[in-house]
Length: 82
Image (cartoon, rainbow, N blue to C red; front, side, top):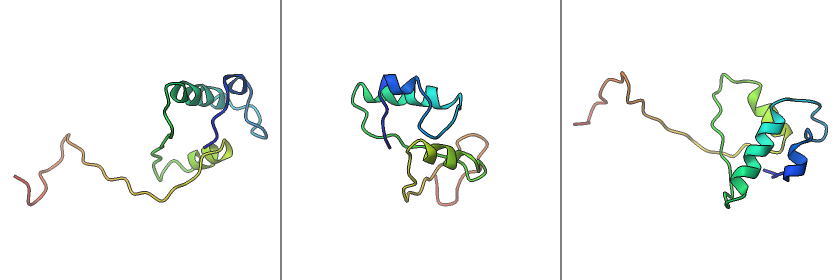
């Protein structure tokens, strides 16, 4: 991921054209980088087909990871649990 400076956050990413989402993303990156956050991870649902391309366009890269979750609301108890 490439962090942009606050000045860059006021301008759309190069080649991205005007996108009203780029500016807030850049501001969020700068806000998180200021206290020393070194890396951002996104969780994107497989059904959000346009989202990976958007983030790739502004410098994010796909990393091989597996995300696991457990819903605690209205989930039947898993076998083998007490």
